[in-house]
Length: 270
Image (cartoon, rainbow, N blue to C red; front, side, top):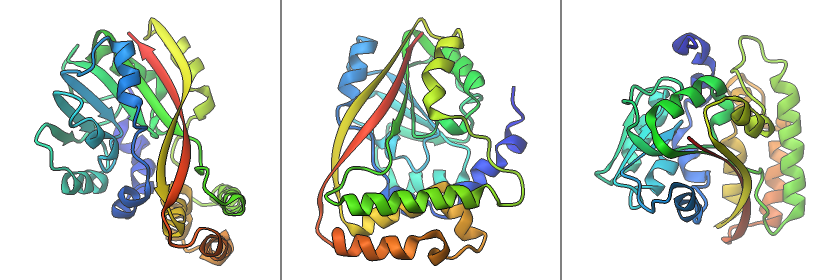
């Protein structure tokens, strides 16, 4: 089993210090997610669902009215504190833990989700843990959005991508140990090869919400790579954020308009 506190300390540090902005700007799960997963489970309301890497509770709160009990598992104290602050439902709880070491009993859950987080987790160990805590026929679902969303401005999209590419280049030059990370495109193959699932399906689900220029900028600043660089002293001009802000203000302004997201779903049935 991975040495959790040591190995994943850089990941926890990466997502510390901006939990409120993360919760404010990030998207929740696709609206149709519960209905789709119900078809795989054969159950429209799981008695227990577990949300791995639950962060600020965005993905956990989605299930409050759709499951009997919800347990979010999150190693970052900063993120858990924000999740507790934002959550009102009595059937949602959060615990410290890792995807490969939840502390939950065997065969206790009908559903496990992992929203925009599986690439930060040890895949094989996480799949083994999912198989352990899921009941027979239980479902594991990893959900990742394509970034950025489709907004009314392709110019803002282009500027976002430029910032993100610059951040990726600069991040590779940062000193110190970098967080372990697994390629998202490899999730389905790793699930197939894990021996933990009797059936694996890879599909796309669309989602619509809305945003304005402030949210578009907030989404960029909620990216771990961007925050690591800002924490390390890199300026917004250097990262291209100042240019993105100028374009975004002109193109998206302050009016809320529809945003279109594509979610990559990787589903495994035990």
